[in-house]
Length: 371
Image 1 (cartoon, rainbow, N blue to C red):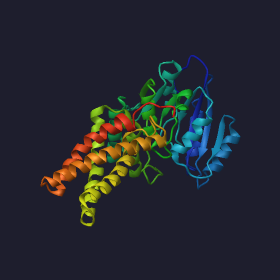
Image 2: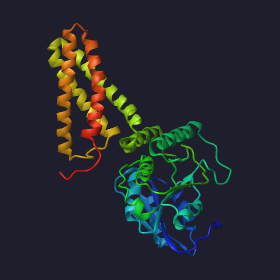
Image 3: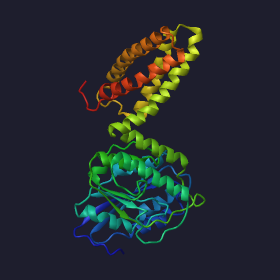
Image 4: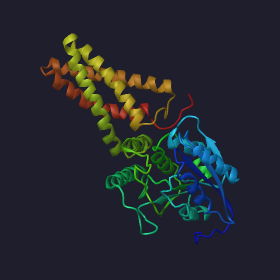
């Protein structure tokens, strides 16, 4: 038993997402049950995410043996994020935490993480594998660690939280907080999403070192490079809309660059078949659609100020105005003797600045209207 003592009784809900963990589920959950004492009462929610092995049978046996264990079942695989959302929604304890069934983490560390919550100093506490609690760790994948630290750096850049381990499994929260975050991610993107929304909520976040005994892919580790790409996307998607203006401009540069490439290639491809004005108009409309999709996926909040039809109407109006500006500049420069490519590139440069501010200040403006 940990030497941590609590000065009052409380119920701690621990959500255990489980997918194909028949070998480790029982010893993992039994280790979790050992953190209880006369003041810490557990509610354990195992969420079987449509396992294809005997995990569900093991979970059912555990639920029969221990009254504090509940089993929730997914009939279709939803990913770790989906399992956590199911568990969080069903939690009834004062505090809520996460414990993976793969035995990479020591559940006794949860007692340490709970201290700032029980004392009323924190709203959420994250366990850091890089503030090692024991001074000993299993040495595994260098590049995996570098990717984790890189994602943590990007997360800190956007959220202004000085974390050392954003991707950690061990996170504990006040129940009211975690149930208010409106989580959306279904796979491992749930980790950056939780941290992003914690930052936006202005929650009091603490961090404490934990032990970590990672496993190899041969031993069943499931996270892969695609999840790293998704995590990076999530950091942009859930944070960019409230990032500082210079950072938003940098992100929009790449969005605008992509749309500009579509615009320019489309214009040059259509030019032999139609007039310069018609080619410029058609290319601009296609590029505007690409720009809109990237804006709502990466940079700005969809329906932040307008309803969906209202947002599209305002966007279409801004596109129409900027399209006339783009076409006017392009056709005018060509009439003055500029090359079609040069004219289009200059018009695109002017359009980049106008497009960004039209989207930020008008189309995706923060603040909800009652429409």
